[in-house]
Length: 381
Ligand code: NDP
Ligand code: MG
Image (cartoon, rainbow, N blue to C red; front, side):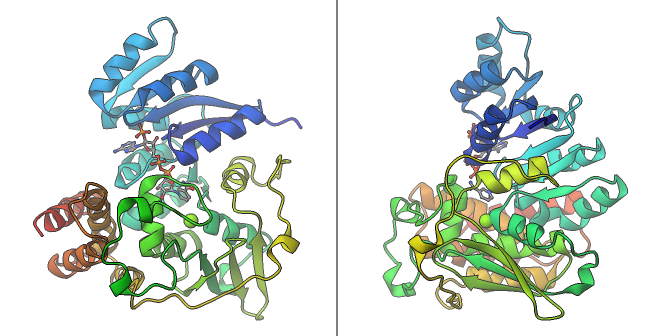
């Protein structure tokens, strides 16, 4: 199939980034203008030699110098730091930027990419959680598309093909796997170690999003992400253990349209790159007989109350979603380093949300001030 598409990949060394490159390897029409990593320069060097981008960025400045030496025999430009990440986001003739960095680090480069009139294949959910009101306005002003990569949001987006008026949406049905601790109560979770929380039943993802899946923080972030992508706060979370029905839309006539598939991130990534076309994909066909039945249950928001905190943050708006997100980013880091208990993650988010007053309609500076305050609030616990 003839298909030409120039893209840049921010976070090319991560779980989403490497799967994006797998698709580019399969479809030679997809070429890479720029790529970035934070510190994994060994992998970034191999990727750069294979895909020959014009530019690579390493946000860790010291490592950027090392990579520059390693790639001295090529004509690939190597840059460093957060300014470098913005240059990678805006450079050359890439039509689409895949935002696959983790955390609030994705916000500013995404904004810059939009201003440079690049379409966004959005994996970095933190961008819309923290700056959704700014990002969606800019996307409209610059007439660019934000194509969801997150599997649930891609499923919703796919279910909405053919819907010409979003007022026909009654509600969004957002599915959650329930993670490795589904069915457990709080007193059974006191001794959870990082290696337990890193065992996701259905998906193989980066560490942060895997921990977030186990606490339902990830689902909370996805509720907020969905609000900005689809313009409704009427979002219902369903625990669906098989991760086969990736989410659905219920319309005003009570019809429900869902997207199903084997749990495989390559489909949502590929669809974001080839939309509105669908290209063949090797392997991982869905065999419904293998599953036999699909189940749906209410989430346990007493045990996994971070999900309720996310709905609170969504309702309050302003900087509350940023506080929710940034408190979680530090709390997960502390948990991974053995400095915070597993249940401490949700507690830390609650304390940060309770202790920092809201700011309505925040500018970008307010968002970063909230990010800093939330990090300090959690570290001081
Ligand atoms: P990974 O941890 O696997 O990869 C993160 C990428 O970002 C790596 O390239 C990493 O570089 C880079 N990075 C890390 N820290 C920074 C920083 N401070 N500044 C700039 N770049 C940085 O994450 P995932 O691929 O799992 O997730 C990426 C995003 O996609 C997240 O927002 C996540 O929520 C979302 N997502 C992921 C899914 C998945 O299946 N993995 C599913 C749906 C959404 P290095 O390798 O050098 O550390
Ligand atoms: Mg998801």
